[in-house]
Every structure is written in C-alpha cells, then in structure tokens.
Image (cartoon, rainbow, N blue to C red; front, side):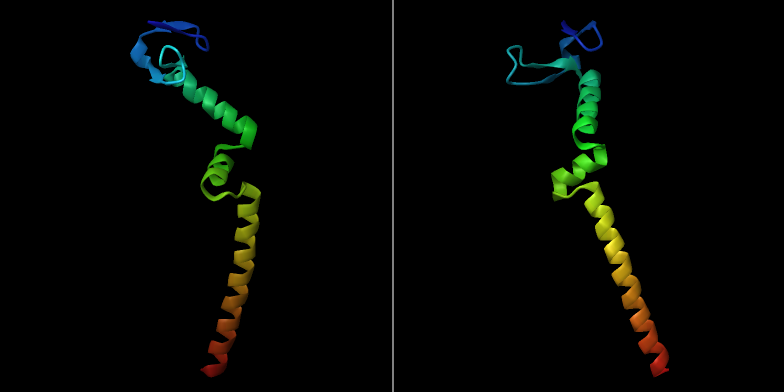
Length: 91
C-alpha cells in the first residue's frame, strides 16, 4: 500500500506506475493522478496538448502550422486558377 499525495488516498502498489529514479521504484502519484498532473503541466508549459505534440513531433508551434496551412491554401487556389484558365483557353 502506498499514499498518493494528490488524491490523498492509500492505494495498492499496482495502481502506481514505475519510476526507477524513486527509491520505492514507483511514481509519487497514482496512475489517474499522474495523468492529470502531466496534462496540467503540458497545458501550463505549452498552451495545449496539440501544441505540445506538434513541438515534440515536428518542432513547430500551433501558430506556425496555421500560418503554413494558410500559405498552402493561397498557393493551391492560385495554382487551381492558373490550371483552370489554361484549360478554358485550350477547349
């Protein structure tokens, strides 16, 4: 049995994740509390879960992605207009 300081309950050891750096070999918080704490930390440090994952996986922020999508939409629409104008002149 181990005490979770977040939910203030004593729970069985199998409700705690592993953490080799801790003396007990278990995380300080139980699994549900640990995921809540991790989610709060990501929101506080990165703004949102999506922003955290974009930085982690691709090294870009949510704002940069929105800007890239807007640029692609403009270039795609102009390319479509050019192809449409060449199509109408050939037919």
